[in-house]
Image (cartoon, rainbow, N blue to C red; front, side, top):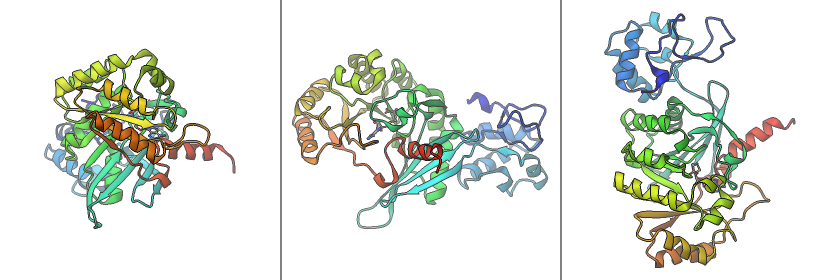
Length: 381
Ligand code: SAH
C-alpha cells in the first residue's frame, strides 16, 4: 500500500495528504489526496473516513477509472453537501501544460504535477492496416522527474534529476491519455523520463493499479531499465507478468561505459546474470534494447560480439536507430548498415527487430519535448 494513501482525510485537523503549498494557510489551499492509483479496498476505506457508506468506494472507483474525473466535485452521485467540503482536494490529477500532436497520430504531453514539476507522457496509437480503426493505444510513461543516469545520448539524462514520481502520478498519465484519445489504453511502456528501477515501489504499485483498476493486461506492459545492481532480481521477486526491457546499447563493457556512466559500477556479465535470473524466476523472456549510433556501436563486428554475448539467452533484441537530440553528438545509422547489422544477428539465431521512431516531429526522443520547452522558458523572448 502506498504510505501516502494511508487513510487520508480532508479534515483540516488531521491530514495525511500532502499540502500543495505549506506556506499558504488559507482554508482553500489545494491538498493532494492521492485517490488515483488506489484500489477499491483503499477507496472504500477512505470514503468511510469521510462518513460515507462503504458502497460509495466502488462508485468512486468507477468515476475515477471509467469516467476519468478530474475532481470529486464531478461525482454527481455523491451528496452535494459532502462534495462542497472537498473542493480543495486534488485527487492526484495533473494539468496538461502542453499537447503536441504529430502527423502520425502520436500525441506528446507535458504534464504539470501539483508541485509545478513537469513530466512527459506520449500516446502512441496503432491502427488496423488499411483502416482508421484503432488496434492499440500505447502510452509511454515517465517514472521520475528527470533522470540521474545521465546516459550520453539521452535528452532526459542531460537535464538532471528532480525526484521520483508517486504511484498516482504514474497512473494519472494513463488516465490523461485515455481521456484525450477517448479510447482505452491497451499497452504501457516505461520508456519516458526516468529510471523505473530506482523507483520500484511506486512503479510496481502503478502496474498493479493499471492492471486491476484500469484493466490493462500486465503482459501488455514493459518496464525498461538501464540496469541497477540488484534491482532486476528485486523486480523478479515481485512476479509481475510485465515484460522487462534492458537498455544494453553495447556489445562490450568498454563501449557501454562510454555511453552509460553507471555501467562502470555494473559489469555486463553481472547485468546479464541478473537478467538470466529474471527469466528463470518469471518465465518471461527479456527484451534487449540497443540504440544504434553510427560509427559507435553499429560495426558488423559489434553484431558478432552481441550474438556471442546473448548466445542461448531467451531474449529479443530491439534495435533503436538513434534519434538525434542535438546536431553535435551522435549520428543516426544509415539504412544499409542497419540492415547488415540486423542480418548478422539473424544469421546467428538472435531474435531481432527494429523499432521505428514514432512522432519524430513531436520531439519524440526521450525527454526532448521537455528539454526544448524548458530551454524556451529559460530564454527570454
Ligand atoms: N531509464 C530507462 C527508461 C527510459 S529510456 C532505460 O534506460 O531503459 C527508454 C529508451 O529510450 C531507452 O532504451 C533509451 O535508450 C531510449 N532513448 C533515449 N534517448 C534516445 C534517443 N536520443 N534516441 C533513441 N532512443 C533513445
